[in-house]
Image (cartoon, rainbow, N blue to C red):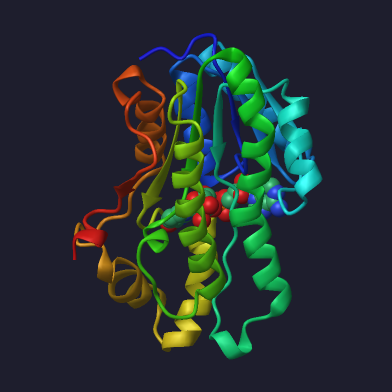
Length: 257
Ligand code: NAD
């Protein structure tokens, strides 16, 4: 599978799943734009490493995905793109009555509204280029719910809906839009949930991993960033040209339960 000549923008890609997706797209030959809200030397070093290791162009563009104008500016600063991966995301765990309003607003902005803004900015470029792939990173929590994650689950269900609408608006063009729904992947975002979940359930770390996180993942194994990256590359392939407006679960059987 070669993505030579294609440019990919991956939001929230200096860590975790986004970085894994960027690596797999680069391995397939795509030019990659990395992004996050920071602007540290390490962010630019990461882009230089990916460029060197995969012999592709790769650069880092700072843009805070909680701000609609910065989401749109990211796409323009990239010069448009052929592949847009909306991956940036944050999490907060609390019961609804105690859920901080600013966390609700931030999660909806970063996990959902950012994808609306980047898609709005990217589609005209894809139409000009006559080809496009939008891959939204939703979650098993885009299809099912769990307690204490109201904002995240609302945003992830929202992004599944946005993916379907984007697919219908581009259905007669060589542009597709789909959502990948990962189960648990051991990334910094998941690591950060462990202490709060330990507190909510009064459990130790190992018990939270086995009995809470992987309780609903029948494989009893975390999915990997390489697997999410590989699924993204597949959705960019010719074999996936008629796959649009759907969800692909990479969740060890979670949503089969
Ligand atoms: P992570 O914390 O490792 O990565 C999140 C990325 O988003 C980072 O690069 C971070 O810098 C970036 N980000 C956060 N706020 C941002 C902002 N305001 N502007 C720009 N970038 C910002 O987490 P992850 O687990 O790799 O999560 C990536 C995506 O995958 C998220 O959308 C998450 O909801 C989804 N997901 C993760 C899992 C999992 O188990 N890890 C499961 C299902 C879905």
